[in-house]
Image (cartoon, rainbow, N blue to C red; front, side):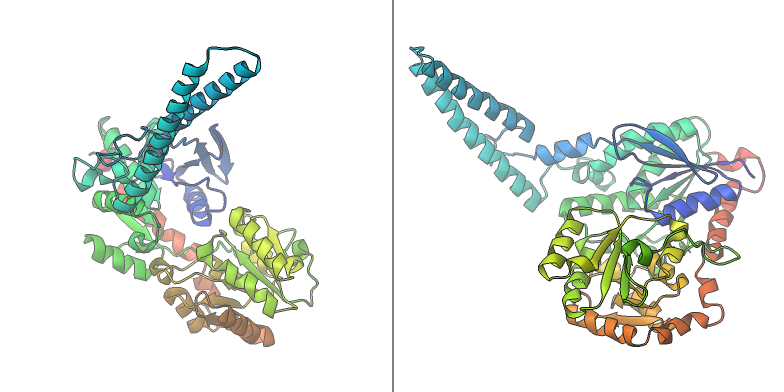
Length: 489
């Protein structure tokens, strides 16, 4: 069985995505020839290694997505609008330069320019009218779902019009998949499901259609994507292609139930929780730790958050709470972005700027050991449907670091904390509630750490207990021998 080729797909740069990295590494360690394809952060393709797996990052220019956003459907109402923002910018620049040139020539004493001035002034008026029409067309398209021409091929192609970024991914990832000629394609998260199925269909023309596994990281209708067109497009995409995969994996039992109900799947998805890798000797202890890197003394309370920084993660609540927790420090282990900059400014306004620290990501295997010196691990998802279903990795990483947890009261995560007794919960978005829960834990952290002494609790929250199900699935789909008959289309 070893040597069979598996291609994994993910729509990010791979860095910081612990589930994807763990999946690739453990599959490669089990003997599969694994290539993980992700998006390059720049314009150049790059290849590297992750354990025994190969990482391939390819650039995705998002050309079609850019056109959709800069060239809305105009229709009769906005027929006078420019075709795109790029054309509008060019025409405006041409007019403004011509007027500037006329002014310069007049200043140099040239005469006979009056007619040209009238002409270019009229052109400026027309240009401004057409640009305003384009702006209105864009707002109208976003409000009504008419950003691009409507699909002519039913739901099977609705995604092409509503979320053309999927076509951009296919243009970038498709050739790489076909060159690798995989035996199995493992699609991580919803944007990759159609990329995988469509690549498998093309490869079937060569006589060997690879099996396709869909790894649903979340329940798509509950994600809250914001843009109604994007939501409609990706939900159409998932509905179309989930019926054509060979197996489905997901992250927790509630999402498995919803996927069964939503899509009428013939087989219940296999649940593979996103829990840490823990070796036989326990967690890996990296050279540094969060307290040392934050410069916080051992006797000072330190809260730690690990993960993406975004408003929906409730980090603003934690920063605002620092004003009511005067002796407490907060460290975000994250990738800096505009939201982090906003949080820093807010902390400074509150007089807590020196108590908010931002540190870069560490390797997935190092997280539990890295955070072990913090006092409390925090997690603050706001009240969105999908957040009530999620079971974030960070909760298990905090647990293996043997630190108490304070989390918002979203159903699945909060249920885990209440059941295990390793922390407290607070109402999502509630600063006072976060402060109260944090004070409870800080008053007696050993009480909450004692939960980790329960026999078998931490052992059940390890990747080793989960990853075997993926290897078993691969073997079932591909057969137990080297005979390729199971790969026939």
